[in-house]
Image (tube, rainbow, N blue to C red; front, side, top):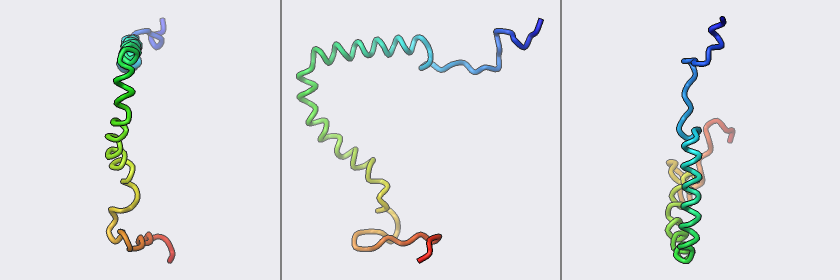
Length: 89
């Protein structure tokens, strides 16, 4: 009998929760609950959408404007960006 093909292998990592049957059932129940909540409270949800969009603007500004180079020393309004040291002038 070959022990390499044994079914209870201990070197295999267990699957995570989100890859189990319980997670699929939880997601299905959550989707059903969300459907009925939105169906019953559609007027409230759609009435709040413009305000949620306005509330999202500061968050979008914070997370989307971090890569413009405004935080580098020497860069700012009216000052040209400093060339990289590796680039020829």
